[in-house]
Structure formats: structure tokens, C-alpha cells
Amino acid sequence: MDFGQCQGIVAGAILPAIPLIVRYREQENVAFKLDPPSKPDLYRLFDNTGWAHLIEPQRFDPPADPRDHVPVRRYATSDEQYDSVDQLLEFLTRHISIERETLIALEWALHEIMDNVLSHAKSSVGGFVQATHYDHALEFIVADAGIGIPQSLNMRDHAAALERAVSEGGTRDARSNQGNGLYGTLQLALVSGGQFEIHSANGMLYLDGNSGAQRSREVRSPLNGTSVRCRIDIREPNLLQAALRFRGRRHDPQHDYTERTFGTDGGEMVYAIRERAIRDLGSRTGGARVRRQIENLLSDQDHVVIDFQDVDVVSSSFADEVFGRLFVDLGPRSFMSRIVLHNVNATIDGLIDRAIVQRTRTGNDPKA
Ligand SMILES: Nc1ncnc2c1ncn2[C@@H]1O[C@H](COP(=O)(O)OP(=O)(O)OP(=O)(O)O)[C@@H](O)[C@H]1O
Ligand SMILES: [Mg+2]
Image (cartoon, rainbow, N blue to C red):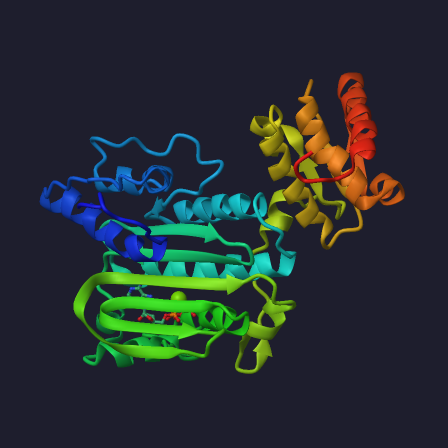
């Protein structure tokens, strides 16, 4: 696979091919060789996303440090599906500002689309998922090497099969399934002004909530399997309520990453530094990721507990990036009431105090 001259590529273009490549390699002994892009940033992309490793594992290692990029995840069981979703959501909440309800909507959609692979696709290599974030949007792609939507719905017209699959209640089995997974996910994309795209067997379907474009047709190069790409614009307020309605009624998803990860019996959100941020304590970029997560928690909480249990020390740059900046952003009174520190030893206490004093002098210039 020669990407030597490649000047640009998006996950939506490459992910649908990954399950097929893996299937050919693992089950039919076909060897793939990758010529990675010679452009350095694209080379890094192939490396960080794990594409290079998935195409030619003998020559390319799995991504070393997935903290800055979220690599493609492979899953074949529902436990693996849940782990993958948690990792994706953790990654996203550490990099973008996102409201809790929007995160719940995203979590719902990820589970629906990923579960379809395990429930319907009969994909011998399982499913592959990747998520990417942009300034105001996030996008996920789920791909498999299974039987495809037309065959699952037993329809000859492949474009019509995709239209049926995304319609409300367009299910294969109305006795056990609601047929809302694809429909609801499409609504999240459309209502927010995002994008939605499916390729399956000979069919393709594309809708753009921003331009209003809609295409569905039979394609000449068929895909053995299915890929679904969903882009959600995260600026849309009340997305969950506006988009997730079935038969006219609002749907309340059962999963909530925020509650599951930070919630406590007492109703408070607790951010445990030892558990969530131990590898971030040494650096400014680590601090920025932790601050982003705390800010996301604050978006619907009046206060957040930050627990330093079993943490002996943090770097000054971490203390500044998290507490110095939060202090200046929130202002002293709000900081005091909304950021509740627990189990802080004298060393960390001093480091946080010093960071706040210095940051108050320089202000919150992102570069300073
Ligand atoms: N990855 C896939 N591979 C093969 N067929 C699929 C795939 N995803 C969806 N389908 C087909 O599209 C139909 C609609 O999917 P959708 O998720 O909307 O509803 P459902 O899975 O049937 O019901 P629900 O998700 O509400 O339990 C499915 O019944 C199945 O026939
Ligand atoms: Mg489904």
C-alpha cells in the first residue's frame, strides 16, 4: 500500500479498509506492505493512530504513547466495546470542552454503532473504532468486515437498504430490536449541523446537517463490510433533548461516563488525581489535559472535589497549569468554593499556593 506521495488523509477514508486488511492477513495469509507517507506529519499520523501497525505489524509497532492521539481500537466482545468507549471518552474530555449532556449523547451513539457490529455484522475480525476531535466537532468511525447492511436486511437494492436502516424503526428484527441505533445517531449528526456517512456492500449514504446535502447511491467499488462515520458539532446546545427522540418522545440514555467515572454515593463529583492523572503530574501538557477534564466537570456542577490521596508531589508546571490557571479563570471567590481540595500534603499545598500567586501576577495568557 503505497502512501509515499500522499499529501493528506482523513480517518474516514482509511478506517473502512482496516478490517479488510486485517481479515486478509489473519485469515487468508495475505501479506501487506506499507510505504508510509514521506511527509513527516503524515508519517507521524500513520504511526500515532496505529494505522501503520494495523497494515504491517511486522515492521511498525503499536502507538507508543496514546495520550495525545487516540489510536484505532479493535473490539470483539462487549467488554472490549465498553473499555474502548471509556478510553475514547476519557481522551475526548481531556482535549475539548464538551457539555455533559453532549457527552451522554456521544456515548449513546458510540455504543449503538459499535454494538451493531457485534449484533448484526458477523465480522470475523470484530469491529474497529476511531475518534477524532476538531475545534468544534468530534467525529467517530466504526468499521467492520462483516456481511453488510443490505444482506442483514435481506434487500437487493443496496442504496435503499441503507435508507431503510437509518429510518426510524428500520430494523431487521422488530421483535427484539427497536431499530433506533442508526436513526438516532443520524439525528445527532443532523441536528447539530454535523455529518453522517455509511458505506456498506454496494451502498453509500451521506448526509450533511450543515449544507443539507443528501446522497445515497450504489457504488462501483463495493466494501466487504460496513463503515459508519458520524460527526457531531459540539456547539449545539441541548443536543441530547433536541435530537434523541423516538416516536416523538425524548430518550434518556442509561450510560453516563461522567457519573460512572467521577460520581460518588454522596452525589459529589470526585476527581482522584492518583487514579486519573498520575502520568500527567510531571508536565504542563499533562496539566492542561487535567484542567480540561475538571472544567468539563464544572460545566454542570457547582463544585468538584479534587482528591490528592496517595500523591506525594506534583511538578510546579502542573500546579500552575491546573490550579494557577483555574484560579485566574474562575476568580478567587469562585475558585475557593468550586474547587475543593482533599488530602493535600504540605508540599503540594505549598506548590499550589506558589503557582496561584505567580499566575495571578502574569495573568492567563495561554503562552505565558
Ligand atoms: N454493522 C452492521 N452490519 C450489518 N448490518 C447492520 C450493521 N449495522 C446495522 N445493521 C442493520 O441495520 C439495521 C438497523 O440498525 P439499528 O441499529 O438502527 O437498529 P437495530 O440494531 O436493529 O435495533 P436497536 O439498535 O434499536 O437495538 C439492523 O437491524 C441491521 O439489520
Ligand atoms: Mg442497533
